[in-house]
Length: 391
Image 1 (cartoon, rainbow, N blue to C red):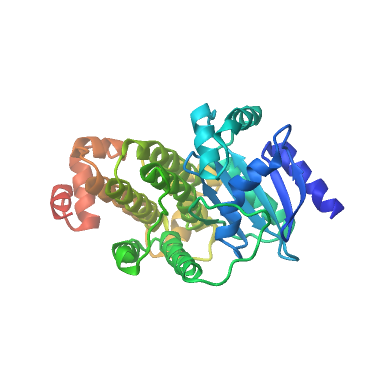
Image 2 (tube, one colour):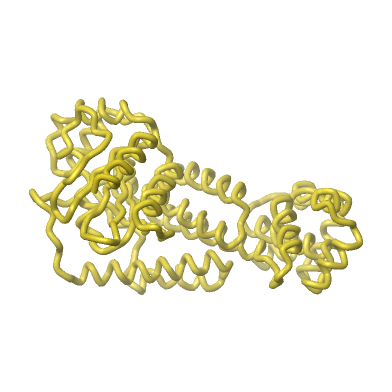
């Protein structure tokens, strides 16, 4: 246990996030608590531990946007609770509500707020990195963290194992749907994902367990879903920079929605957006590392002009060799491939925005609107205007 506590202390100190080590139902060690009484955090994190017994790694967000996570240690009954952490300065009112949601006295709000202000701010991305690091160090595995909803419940004096119930079966079904969604995103199967999302109500499944503030709770679940979908899309081949830009945009924009139907629709749009982008950048079936690198390079520059001289110089290969090698392995020229992904991007923008054809041609670095329309019809079978009307 000595080496483990040293490891947890090092991670907690470097990340600035509290950590509690539990052995069964007993608190073994706590790190980064300063002057705060640990039972305050114990009660705050209890719903996370109680509601998902058996999962190897999971995370949640409270209605007041506190990030919490847990990693179960595979070799015994112990587990590590990580958090809370926050990406903004907590107000006194938020501290009060956080305490109320965990069944504690609002009179402790000043103590909790001062403690939170003493810790460095932590983004969702950074929190997930620390959670993944803990899992790698403790379990030597690359598990995917499961996102769970935060449902406030009264914390008992000790941790006890809950009996199997319908709620447990429901969670298992929810996890199966989550895996189906992740598979669709990773492999760019937009049509299949649309069908799953369309059938969610008939499956009796939702993305959220509503807390006191239902809309805030649903927004928080949306915010948690974005990095999970983003990482899955990156596994499917989406450029890291593109995925991060999309994530930041969706997390900002969801704050403008104030109803369940609007947020749920926006969540579906977010998932389908990532999935369709993965579909556009899926690598050709090839064993050639050179071809894969060329495809990644072009996908990252889909809105730019990339002349053959640039490709030749970047990869330090002769132009004729690159062209011949690419066609031998894909059955198409580099220009055909580049135009295909440009037109796929154009299709998405035509379906989801009101962008003009002139602006679209300019954004995708076509020399003129007429040339863009000609290329679009060649690869899509319709003119851009016809495509927009049909979709």
